[in-house]
Length: 109
Length: 116
Image (cartoon, rainbow over all chains, first blue to last red; front, side, top):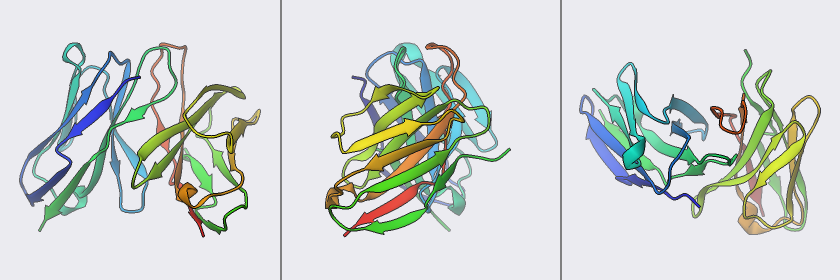
């Protein structure tokens, strides 16, 4: 089955810094999402982005489906951005998302 | 509109007991998926239901089962609990079109199970 890898596993930033999180997937996908898991465990949907580029405030994401990777950009990071970011992908004809192991982000004041 | 609702939020059980978790999807969503999250294994797919039919199942033993009702609400059951079943169980709903349609998951807050 499809494999999803995320890098880096851990990231520490000063408030105001920018960062790029990467997600590689081993097969063609027709669904891809980025999530932020808050300290209480809830997964918050950031982007549904099987291809192309989207932006939402300080966050943006790009998926290059032909090269099997997706990037999540966080600009001007804030302490509230801390948490774990997950990428999840789903291949055509299946009904299950495979999650990466996540990037744990800590933003220092 | 209301989000995905999971109950109970927290529960403690002992080994050998069974547990039932409930998930109410977003109104109009007919697909419900369940995931288990543990520190060691990360987020793993349990099963997915659409219109009361299980369409896919992850690699979990038969002690893990689920069902979906006609109103799209779903339950999952774990029998003969083991210590390793301690986890955060997450439910997601989706307004899924056909097999190739967009499948955007919205998650509930989760049910945190502790097995003693």
